[in-house]
Structures are given as C-alpha cells and as structure tokens.
Length: 134
Picture 1 (tube, helix red, strand yellow):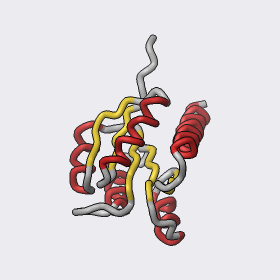
Picture 2: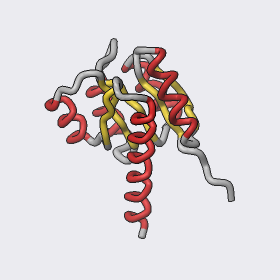
Picture 3: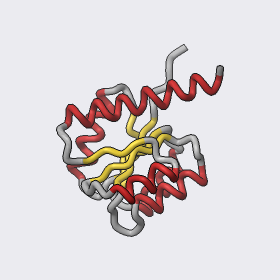
Picture 4: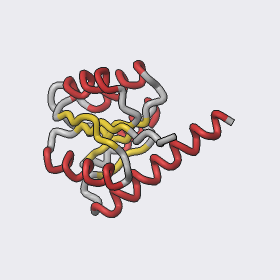
C-alpha cells in the first residue's frame, strides 16, 4: 500500500518565503496543497483542504497568525502547526505554543536550518501519533 504524502498549507504574506517553504517541504516528501497570503484566505483554504500540517506566519494582513491558529485548533486540534516569525517575541511564541502550535521557526535562519527544523518537528509529530496509537 502506498503511503500518503503529508499535505501542507503554507501561509505567509511574503511570496519568497512561501516559495522557500514550498521547496523545503516538497524536498522532505510532502505535498503542498495550498498557499495563502493572509489569515482569512488561510482559514478558507484550511477548511477546503484539511491539511496535515500548516506553516503559519504570525504577522499577516486581514487576520494574524495567532487568530488563525486558534481557529485551526477549534476545527482540528491534531493539526501540526508550525509558526513562522521574523520577530522573536517570547510572549507571542509562548502564546502560540500554549494554543497548540508544535514549534516556531524564525524566518531569518539559513535554509538548511529551516529544513532541519521542519523535518525534526514532523518526525516528532509522527512519533507522538504512533505512540498514541500503541
């Protein structure tokens, strides 16, 4: 039986960041099902595609990432959400983790580091799911 690819929604108002994240997650074997440039569009696409993983920017137009995260967790608390931020504000990051985000990544780290962090977060998430099933 063929293993289903991880389905990812990428949310960032910067096109070049979405392109970089797309490159990384596809290189890890995931499928990007949709991309959004603002928070409202992100929620619409989340509801339409039900992705396994959401790469979610904190600072966006129309609706910020914290608000989007809250909505996603109401819809499906098992969704793997990784917050993306250019601001390393401890309070906001802590709030996101408390709300259910699995990790946060600073957007200004090198691409290799982004790749490593995304891969490790996904690996830990899958290990947690396997542990919960056994």
